[in-house]
Image (tube, rainbow, N blue to C red; front, top):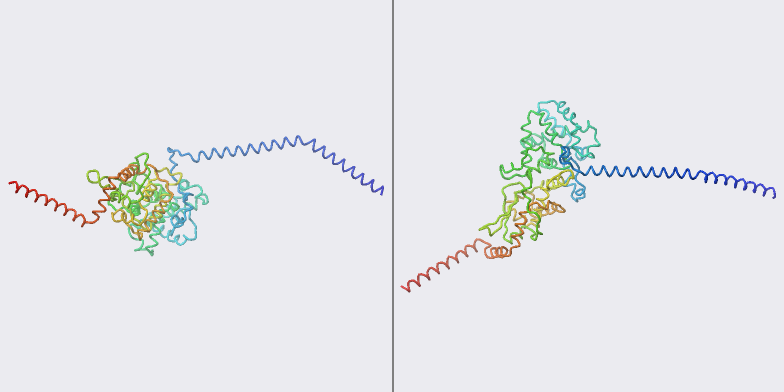
Length: 472
């Protein structure tokens, strides 16, 4: 036992000595290690701080727009995040038949259209008088510049060769298709049904389906049918804008090269500028709700004989007193109206597009006039709204949906809104309108009123001559 105790005590003693030496070594080296640790932490903190400051500086340059920079034109991109949560996003913003450009390229639901695009490209090449190699080479040669016209996130997953071929096929197919639609060759010469043509035309004006107009211009410049192709595009866009008055649409034309087809359509609808439609400064709160309330106050809607959405005006009637007339541009509503206006609004919402929100402001103004089917009926009876969609209720619901959560230019139609509000608040105008509506609501009441006046006049004349006869 004594030996065992001695062994244990020796092991404990040795362990204590080793532990003491290790502790001493650690304590001896700790100040140096601590300094190194402090330096490493400081260096790491400095790197993080530097990276954050660089990120801050880079973010500042990204949100700053230089109006003098020629490269600040809006790029082709996805629909802004604010609209991506819309309950009918797929219905209004995604292609129905064909994908164009890189955003929806390769999706299986659009594969059926790929062979059609190749066929139309082949026909375009035949009509151009050039070989496919020459036309493709022109696109491939400029692919670096064309790539800059797309948002970085949109084009980054494609190499230059893949993107060049994609744009070559899509550009040729779009130009040939538009030419065939305008000249009514699609249905006559090709195995295509009306519904496919209609959906394909809508797909051409989706924000996420746009091709750079520079691409289309390069292809048209290389074609022997350049003039015909250019005229076809102008005619096609006029039809999409539903111009219902001859020649008046010229006000929407401009010599400025558009960004893409959707941009060209927007110019056709709002004209070169909506500056003239603004003015008015600060506005009073709007107290009227719809067309029917305006009608009850003595304000009637009349067509402006133009499809330019900026041509909204207000004028007074007899002796600059009564009634009031609100003139509105002509508008046709059909199955394409929803996608068309939603994508135009999405385009105006893009952060790199410096614009006056002409489409957004128009839709917001029209939505303020349309609450229910009765408002649509009044617009339709006045010859302002041409309803090809279906019932008046469907039209009212459509504009109420498009007009939800819009942020228009607060100065848009400022003068018109002030005139309407001033007229609407005038109690004499309202009283006079009520008298007209209650007592002269039909032609027969007007005839009866005129008969009474004539009768009273004749009675007065008879009485006058009777009195004169008695005096004589």
